[in-house]
Image 1 (cartoon, one colour):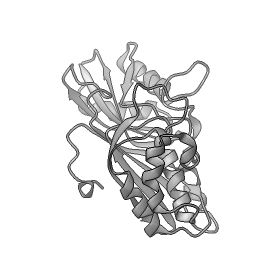
Image 2 (image 1 turned 45 degrees about the vertical axis):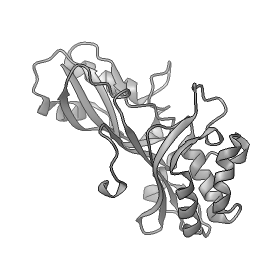
Image 3 (image 1 turned 120 degrees about the horizontal axis):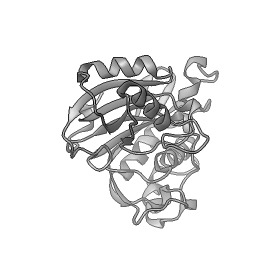
Length: 254
């Protein structure tokens, strides 16, 4: 049977999601736990890769299992086996044609800054410390310019190997998930390598007053990596959710 799983992980101790020789990765840890519980080798397919140090609250994977254990027991059994920095949050039985990556319709990423002068020790692993004033209104305006279908070459790492760099952003907005923390939520049909971290770096430049919000369309049109901001550190980035239906509206998400 094919199982779909929603997985959360603290990316601090991982060299990304995808298996790599001699590296601790989320995929390797998941496959080891699944193999132990299932009693046979199991391979997983994810909705997409996350880089070293990037976190997830809602990564989605699928795998094929030859087992009679009821679906409702899988999460508990796996969490008993997995290390503390990975957690299976939900498991469901899906049809054999379901594909975690190919069937994904949208993804929601969040990039978070701890904007206090003294960082909070207990969120340091999940935020980038930025103890300087930010113009939130300007960052909101800049984000609006990115919504829609564009060629995001300027916001993609130069070494990204893709056939085209056109993507659609359904939303790009600033939120305050808790006092002292500023975050950027980006929801789109797909993302290029380092795209969210580069968008975050560009909006940070806007918030600092280094560039204006109105300069964003020109940066997009330039289609040159050097036109956009720097790539921000990975620890502030989290994959929040992956959607498998048409995206309707951001306000329906929590």
